[in-house]
Image (cartoon, rainbow, N blue to C red; front, side, top):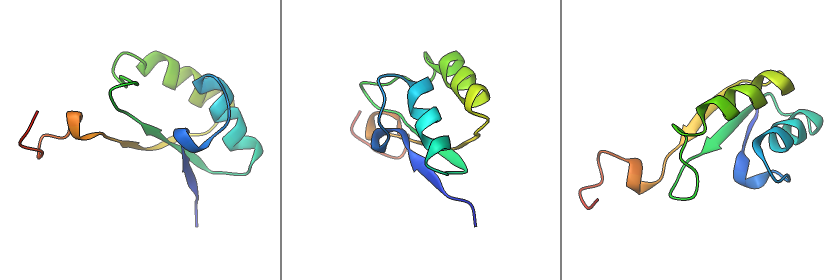
Length: 74
């Protein structure tokens, strides 16, 4: 079984620190939490760099209702 952890649950001031913490804590992957405060498209390069530096893949992108096409109220 592989375990992933969401970025909002990790210590660190930036993605690099959060991915590094996930690696140190023994997780197998990281889930990126997207939302009004974090635009995953704008941060794609930073996500890739942090993932590669920690040698941990991104397991999922957890969206916010503002990004969910199934939520009728934008």
